[in-house]
Length: 314
Image (cartoon, rainbow, N blue to C red; front, side, top):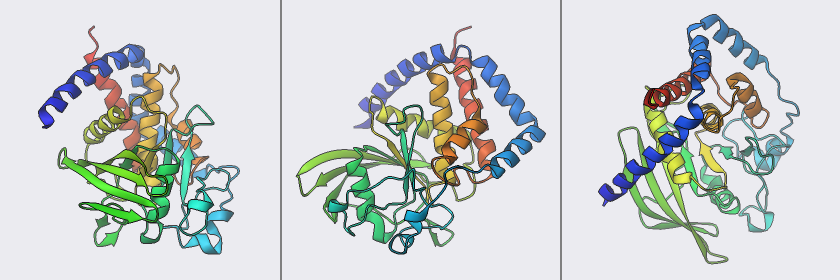
């Protein structure tokens, strides 16, 4: 069943690479910047220190910390800003509240978020999560955490293992689950709004081996994962939902890598990864939590640019 699909994917991947090669033909400059960055540990250290001192303005989180909402947050350190949060329609909400700990992340278009960065659902927020998926027209979910890590719950199991589950007015039906490799798998869901009887297919890409506060073993596996995500997403204009456990460290690292590579593929002449990260932190607190994650983002971007440059006929 998968062989035809994989053949098609090969063809699509070749087309995609050709498009990217054109945009990356001025990539040598960018690559030398990235490589210099990684060799020069002192520069990296200084840049990370400056990022740690960076304060987003405005940065109030009063709605998320209100009595009724505080229990919906996994961490008090990562709560959606008042000025940059996803709001649910109160009339469709299970708890008559518009709050979910999720942030719209804009790239270049201030009206249309490219991503929604959010925490992994809690048992009490699963219906809110599916309501957010529905109301924002989302069709792709990127999940970057195992459900449990070293005995600690990272995320509630928010989908059925077989058949369907009803979460408030949203019925989620598991259509298929395909294991791509040891590191990630892909699930397809049929999402139905029981009030309106409308349906939609949602694809979840689940990266299994990226542990909290850490980085993946190799950037190649994450870059392969990103390609699969973007192939499924291509041509859409809805935001991609990205979540880990608290929706900041791993989620921020993934969004940073994806955003920078997308800018490059569109032919951006200047790439400033630290400035891009500040732009992310203006929209959600704590995006990219450790220096290792920041360095991993630089490495992953350099590796992808390098791979594309190598593929360009000289």
